[in-house]
Length: 182
Image (cartoon, rainbow, N blue to C red; front, top):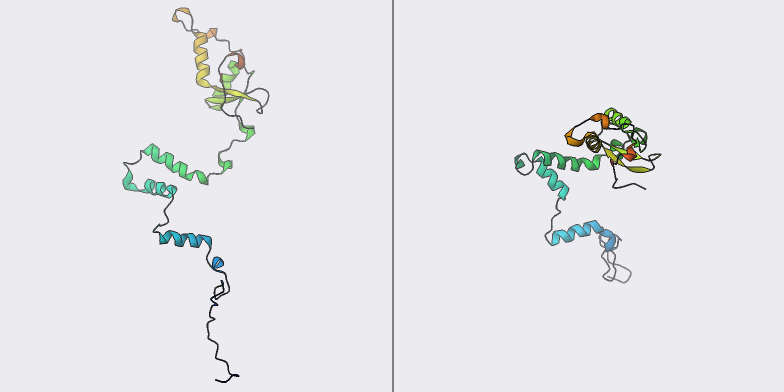
């Protein structure tokens, strides 16, 4: 070969040993994503991607032969918990205008009528607006109050002794509420 002739270039570029770039021009850190690097590291030490507890529980609930593991009630409850992530707040919320509640000054007679109409066993109690919750009243507490008021000396029971015009606040049947949202 003379000085004018040059050797033919190879088809593949040879990487420069002093360069930190790969043959396609990317740096090694750009060539492998962090997720892929972590997968390779886990595979190198023998770790396999494990299913989540959620997946394990769903599989256990789906297995027909695991009838001895969960009772019917437990199976239903756990299935409902797993489906909870698919529920939107609109599906379970009660619009403010539809809340059955009672004002603290309501008479006990009117309260009985409200319980009967609503079909609920508990109702929130408020002072002037729903923004001022006082507590809640439970029908069993109200019935207990009536039983105590109707009971007389000697074990007699007379419902005419119950003052149905008495306001709810004076009957000592309102329970404290555990949480009031801001």
